[in-house]
Structure formats: structure tokens, C-alpha cells
Length: 120
Image (tube, rainbow, N blue to C red; front, side, top):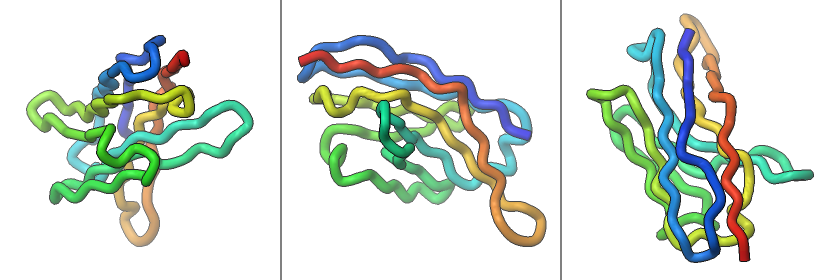
């Protein structure tokens, strides 16, 4: 099992910045990728950014050039630096970690979510 706890959400004006952090505990040695998802009211949860153990990153098009995902292995945390925020970035942001199952498939772990609200 892996436990994830997010922090850093809040209210910010358009053009501002926020930094989200996610602390992982438990069987963290099993994790092969971590990421951030978001879900706005009435919309499906979407991947915002991901980071694999070998350093590969992926971003959804709408945040490229504005958001940066990073990982601090010494603190078992993954962060999302969000700059030039827009009202459409408003959502609940969830930390995610996945780990391979013994034979096939993956375990998906989720944090409790943190609200990000960007005012215009």
C-alpha cells in the first residue's frame, strides 16, 4: 500500500502561481510513476502531468510551458509548480502513484485532493 497526502492548494488570481506537494509513504519502493490529475465540476478527471522513475515527464497540452512536475526522492515527495494560472485551471488536484502488480496490471493510489481556485 502507498499513502499520498497533498498540500499547497488555495485561491489565487489569474496570472499567479501555486505549488502543490504530495508526500508519499508506505511501499514507496514499488512506485514506478507519479503524477497529478485534476477534476473540474462536471468534467472527467484528467491527467495534468506525470513523472516516471527514469525521469520522463508528460504534460497535458493546456499546461505545457506553465506547469512543472518534479520529484524529491530524499523526501519522497512529488511537486507541481503552477505558473501563469488561468481560471480554467480551477479544479480539485489529485496526486497519483502507480505500481506494477505482480503479474499484470498496475495498482493506482490516490491522494485526498486539494482545491485550486483561480479567480479572473
